[in-house]
Amino acid sequence: VNYVAVSKALNISSSVLAAGLAADN
Image (tube, rainbow, N blue to C red; front, side, top):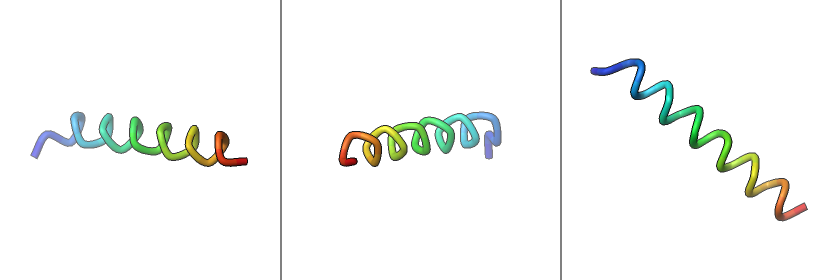
């Protein structure tokens, strides 16, 4: 498992989710 790739993917997902929540609000 490439932990760096996974952590980057999770960070990107979190950013996208945060942006989506901000957009909804």
